[in-house]
Image 1 (cartoon, rainbow, N blue to C red):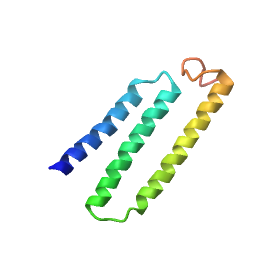
Image 2: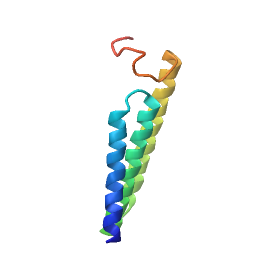
Image 3: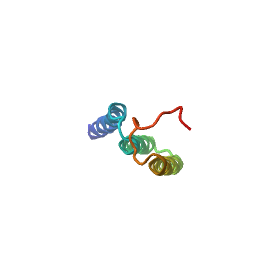
Image 4: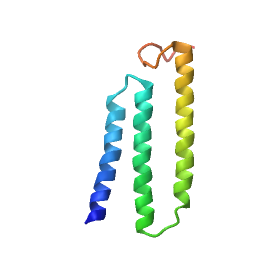
Length: 98
């Protein structure tokens, strides 16, 4: 019963992160934070799944490595965008602009 509650909470964490990602499209930083929230929820779901079936936890380390790379790339895009445009609003620049 307790494990079922953990599964439901983790699924709600992932779904709430996706909802915030889809609803808040104004700032890049807010979108990056919601993506990290989704990745954290997926990591906890993966960790619970692998512990429940007593699999090896090596894949969780690979998942964490890729999520750290995703976070670093997102922050580098944020810094580059702030340096070129002055802010992180999506409405201030055009995609077709070089």
